Image 1 (cartoon, rainbow, N blue to C red):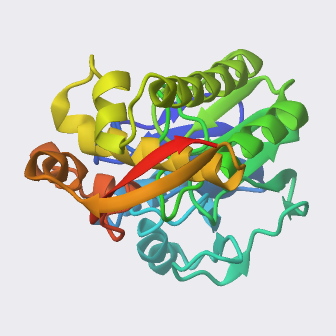
Image 2: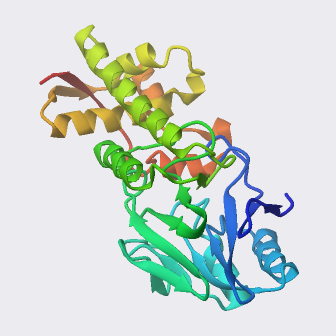
Image 3: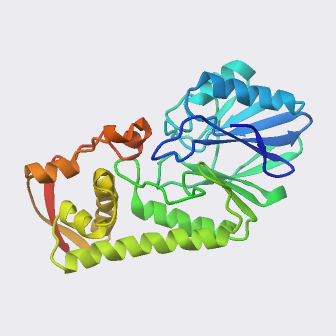
Length: 306
């Protein structure tokens, strides 16, 4: 993928990691910070050629990479930071709670200033606990990582994802950055109407929550039953992923006292097939990380409206 110029100061180089969760690949951004220095946002997976191409792109533009910023620690965004840092000597910036190696911190509410560039830093948890977004005031451009992407919606799944927190993040970002001119997401194309995109995402989450509550009202009691109703028109190979999304909604509703657990029982073989997060057919290791493969759903819980 060639380097693309998106504005006077922003360039995009897409990582070669297309997949069901990454679409056409992770978007790595270079920002011209002035004085022949560039900032990279999200260097992507640990891919030798991509790291080299990022460094060469800065050189071809007449500069060097002076800082590497990572929006969150998922494997399609963060691992390439170490390799790029080794190539360029640039420090790696991450959230205070990020587990990947970083030597500098992206503090909520602070600014990152480098030569003629200022980036605002805003915590944006929900998709991941260590997620930040970055705002470039000079261009009214918001870099959203996986909070908002250029096409489709994003995964919010326990244990790393938390639905109520994610929905709150969307509300805060809409209020704070609804007048942005453009969103640069971690995947897909740029978004030229940020307010409409915020509204779309907020409405989508509200609609899915309503579907979960309607499924309960219709007599569905388990996640497999709800998935079969709500995602009836979705390829069944994706139903285990859908089950994680439903779990995220139920966890949020349970904390709010709107849903309660009645009992827990052993899953039937058919239910276990749906609940087992085996996405090998998708060929995407990122899916296992984002969908919480580290937390198996070992039993079926029966729910009722609170």
